Amino acid sequence: MRESKRTESRAAKNGYLTVTDNRGRILAERRSDAAAPFVTLTATVPATHSPTLFQAIGDAFAWLAIALLLIALAALFRPARTRIAANPPLVAQRQ
Image (cartoon, rainbow, N blue to C red):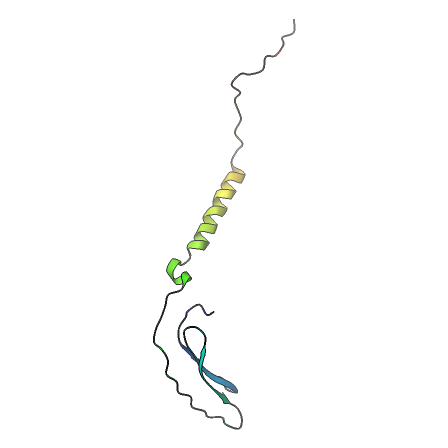
């Protein structure tokens, strides 16, 4: 599926001229080659546009991934905390 979801027409010098709708379905097609170098193609196309998920949220996923990476790096390089025991063990004193 194309990201833009727009009606599109493409022309090739020696290939197919195509018109596709916003879903990628071919609406019209004609071949141009050496035998017929000048070809005309007409088609009726819908002029609708529906937003995609990327257009709706933008780069939010990329920013979230960067934020998680920074949090992981901060946790990795953070100095280790020492634990203070509530009841320190008794050490036998030498006499």
